[in-house]
Amino acid sequence: MKMSLMLETRLANIPGVFIPLPDAPRQALPLDAIKVSAGFPSPAADYEDQRLDINEYLVRNPVSTFFFPVEGDSMQGAEIFEGDILVVDRSVRARHGHIVVAFVNGERLVKRLHRRAGRVALVAENPSYPTLEIQEGMELEVWGVVVGKFKRLVA
Image (cartoon, rainbow, N blue to C red; front, side):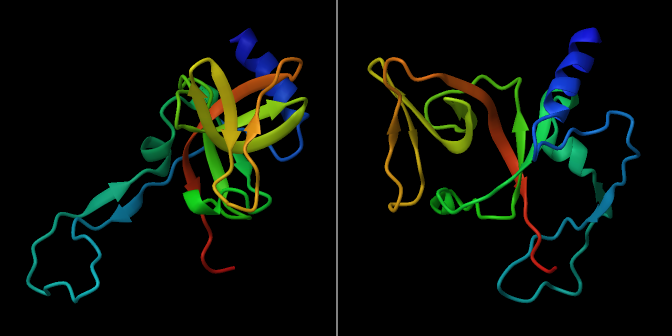
């Protein structure tokens, strides 16, 4: 418990990091069992009234899950846009191909992790941005893996 509190205290000082409250009240939202389609759903379709708890859906490990707002357009190809809120889990082991939040020489970035043949790079999902290959002498900390996101469609 001490370690978690120390981590939360350290992270609370990083601008733009939202720390979920473990004891926050949860609200389950209605979830229709009928999938949305481009056509019209059948009015006679039977469905079971279900509830969706966003915490259960996106937060696997509350102690190691954090929320980061996105700034910039380097990850558009991965459907990550400015203003989205990323759900980042520090307990997931980062692997080749994962989208990660990383610190490179102290700068926080969101990029796709490329790890092959002993080389490590952070790849943008926008052709306007170059790949950042990690060279000797550069400081890299892969902080966590992006496991989801929130997007507001109407202000």
